[in-house]
Image 1 (cartoon, one colour):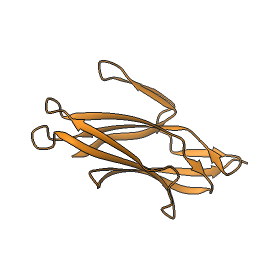
Image 2 (cartoon, one colour):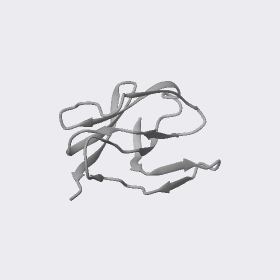
Image 3 (cartoon, one colour):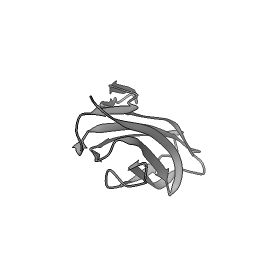
Image 4 (cartoon, one colour):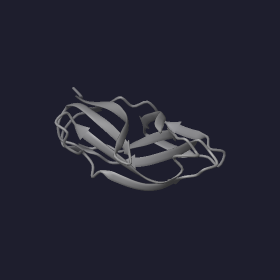
Length: 127
């Protein structure tokens, strides 16, 4: 099981044909003029898995942490079921982290407690 792709954006939806409509995709940093501040962000994630051996129920954990490992959101625990007919599973999650310090942050994703992806996120002071 692995992440096929994962990125942050302002907004996203998935069509019935499993296509994505993304607004403001590829966020790597936020320029914030004051702290603490809440900043909404969406995560688009596609997980590729073996449909024979890895289908069924799983728990996906999503966290946003600062450079000291402190959570900026309550960790999101998503109970999902990977179907046996396909090789990929798409997830869209909207989050509102509360940033209270500038510097490097990270979005961490694990499936069944196994880390699959980290997305760097830098919070920069707007001058």
